[in-house]
Length: 168
Image (cartoon, rainbow, N blue to C red):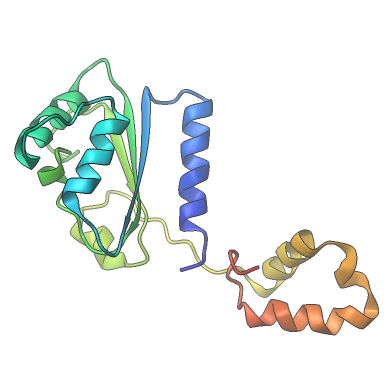
């Protein structure tokens, strides 16, 4: 963790909303304790579906209908996915088999999750180079790093975080 996956998701969500790229933008933080019913419920609420009664199957059917509706254009962001999710069970049809009006983006620290979920594009976010980390550190700390007596301490702190942007 710490390379900025959630920050990236937030930026994507903000840009999609600001530029009105989609009718609805939904972001769900999945985390290690992924609960399919909770995830489905958050997506349902995000696209304006009510959750009165019914089980996962009936909610999945309603969500599926909403997602393939020609008048809707929906972005679903699943953040911090630790294990493969059964998107079909949640009510999200496979993009390969359906003409769809929605996009799904998910972030994970594990490549096998991308592969198991059938990701069409995988983008790896790496750590910052030493030079990039130093530039970011200077931006966050300000002019203090230019004071000769603090330079050694600043470089030590920068190295300690090994290029993880969130730590810096």
